[in-house]
Length: 200
Image 1 (cartoon, one colour):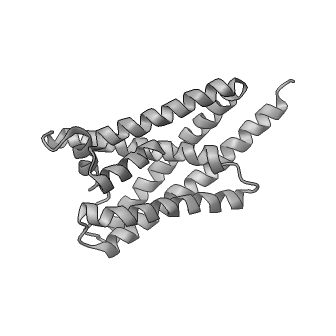
Image 2 (cartoon, helix red, strand yellow):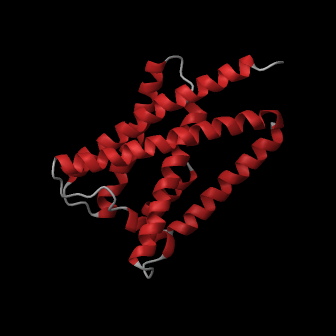
């Protein structure tokens, strides 16, 4: 969740995004290194869970973006799904960067956020007792991300039509969360089955 924390700091404190990201990602990396050293026996299992989370998150990201595109197209919204990307890029590269560079950097930041959020969810809450609970947990996670976005984005991006933005964003986060919850559950159940089947 380090990149998400960096974005919150960037918006609230007006610290350059690249600087806040450097600080939060460095702190997260230090925690991971310390954890790996203290619990070396869990290293392989942890890598498998992270890989499962990343795979689930990629699918969730596709669901998120496609859902937002479809909602905007079907209802002929004036808001655009990817308007924030240039702001991400400007925070990372500075206002003087070219529009193309800002777009590429902003897209990379968006993808990184979606994947790392998905990994964090999988590690912390991906293994639920049932598929139904997994779906609900994933949707709750998506709604949590939605709440944070609604608290920060309108003033930051100067959004002109909040009704459209809310509808688009809510549908996208529900798609992201439900896809993530279902796939993370499936991946973790599969890993558990493989571990139980492995010879002692």
